[in-house]
Image (cartoon, rainbow, N blue to C red; front, side, top):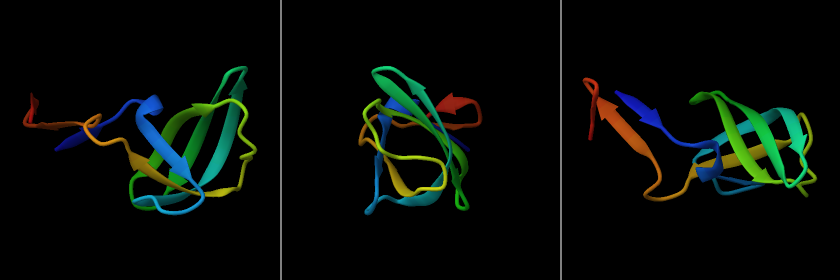
Amino acid sequence: DVFGIRPEHLEVSATGGIWKGHVAHVERLGPDAVLHIDSERVGRLVARIDGDTDLAGGAQVSVSPREGREHRFAGGVRV
């Protein structure tokens, strides 16, 4: 099975997410920031958030997918 979600459809917070991790790298792109987050449970996540974030490398975060925005596949077929 495969689970997919776009970086802009991930919610990042200091508390209360389903996947815990730490920020490995922040790409500051003006109005957006791209976070590379390492999670023991699901591996590397990439999230696109507001560029005004104070998050920096090493920050502990929680991440959750926005409801209805995830994509699941089984046997090459979307389910």
